[in-house]
Image (cartoon, rainbow, N blue to C red):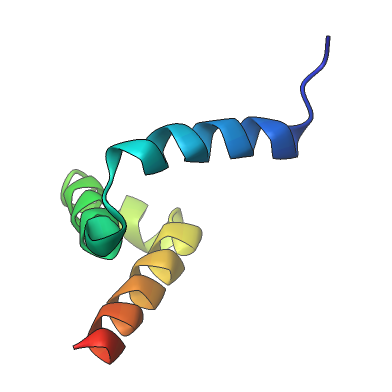
Amino acid sequence: MEIKKEEYYDVLLKQYAEDIAPDTMVDEAITTLEDYFNGMDKQEFLHHNRVLAISYLALKHIKFKDH
């Protein structure tokens, strides 16, 4: 049986969502991205992680608006 991509994402996201309290989800996501970015060299960071960088900036914006 083939699993549709959307169903896979739903299952994966629900699994992680159960482990993270809603009130700390943004902080957890920011910390996770910062840890991931720290393991990269400058070339990799600048040229291969646009989606993660945009996500990080959006999360920081949300955090700033909430405080």
